Length: 117
Image (cartoon, rainbow, N blue to C red):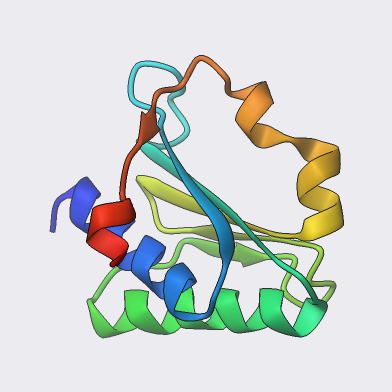
């Protein structure tokens, strides 16, 4: 499975649990950490956990290896490492505070809205 397919599986999983403001950054050429960052948020700890759980389940259904899942219990910033795609699921307040989109402002955004519809 190619990197873009994994990114789309994860983004669709976030969307299915009503994650807000799903942003995909193309990190190729910007960072060696991953090819794609998906950044989204939920409005409660329960929603953040539901989004993370859905990403994990959809990854497993598609035989995508989950390298790490961190922050699930606190549900303020959950990181799901799928190798070349890293999903950052924030509680709304933490997303505003950490503002990864600005931190990685030189990374181009990937338009996935058509794929989520």
